[in-house]
Length: 230
Image (cartoon, rainbow, N blue to C red):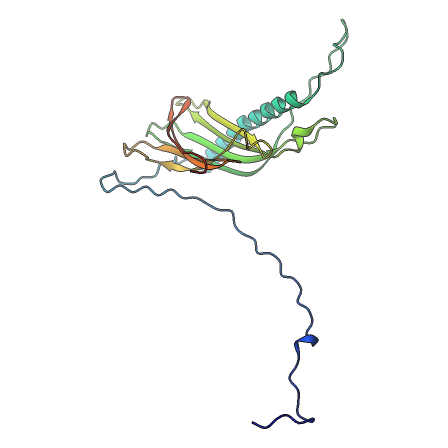
């Protein structure tokens, strides 16, 4: 190979290249968990999904969200009572009380709804999880309105169509150290008896742990409770 002469084309140098614009960070999808239970001698796997018409499902979803809204307001009231100083003097005799205002309606996002027939009794177990925010209050001390609440509510519908709250877990992004979030994963047959249980993951500042609950009447009973960080 002959050495290049003065008239020979010179290779382009990198110094003349234009700087690249920074690329946008790739969006990562939220992590999803799926249960896997194996037992060589266990029962055949089955679905515990409660089948219903779309209109019926929407009605139940609306009713359960109404229960969840009550729980969010109760949690916000509890936080306000813990952070707000005592109010001024009591109303004088004969003084009119202020008119009762409508309770604030939480704005729900990331709503997920499930319905299961865990014991083949035609009484569905209803589960809703969501994030919620309350509208901003005009008062200066309205700190709970700034919080994002994390809601998990389990309810049971009886044969008469009435709803019964089984458990309510309402925490917020500032208090995961004292009240873990309860993330629903799926309905599973954890002990192989043909009856379904509810698998959750508890998430707190200390870590996460799995817990399996059985619905008995209007209560949840823990069949297994993991240890965060173990």
